[in-house]
Image (cartoon, one colour):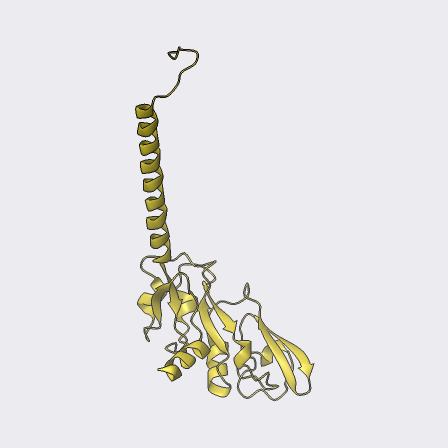
Length: 195
């Protein structure tokens, strides 16, 4: 019985031809997905190396965004929860309270919460942080360096020519893999000690 226009049947040659075209199409699609994944995994983002940062304040003024995409990060595992926090209080503060005149941060982005005598927990209100680095400088000078500056990737424009990187006197800005966008001083020190 021969196929009619109402009941078309495929012969072996037509079936094999369509099967080969479909497999070639799927193979090209799979190859495109593989290439796309490699491209995405090869992407980089700007990041600040806290081990090189000198807290010059240019992150706050050189970024194309206002406020800057650079924010203070608190590495709690390194923190001593000090009563007299060098990143929170201005040097020479006589009374350790939360009054604005005693605080180092110009925007009140660091919050202080009593834990137990004599320990306090410090947290960063990122929307208030301008990335000036004053708290980081104070923490590094009089503490253990648990306050660090980081580029917040959810805010950063990832400019091809980062204006902060161009103006950074210590060369602390570089491109890092998008899969590992944050460099922390603690991690950098652990990596160096393993070598």
